[in-house]
Amino acid sequence: MRTQLKEFFPGLERAMDLTKKVSVVLLTTYQTPAAIRRMDVRRLGTWLHNRKVQRAGALAA
Image (cartoon, rainbow, N blue to C red; front, side, top):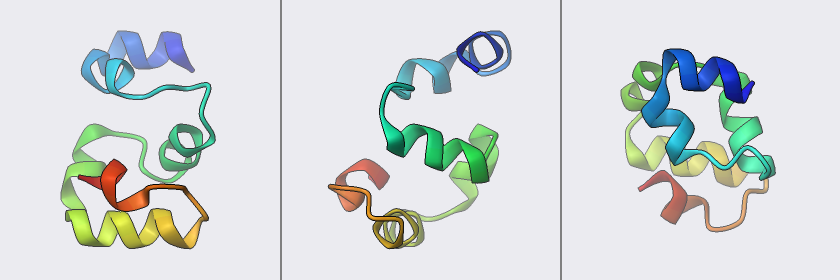
């Protein structure tokens, strides 16, 4: 997964820590940076919170 991110979305790969569950959870639903950007911070924070992600609001921001 890391190789694919580096090739197609290097900025997203740098921002995500793929050893953390939250990164994998986020990328299983929103596979592109554009898809993540389309969600506003509040919606993304709520989405992460519903999936039991710690510090969901801070991560969304």
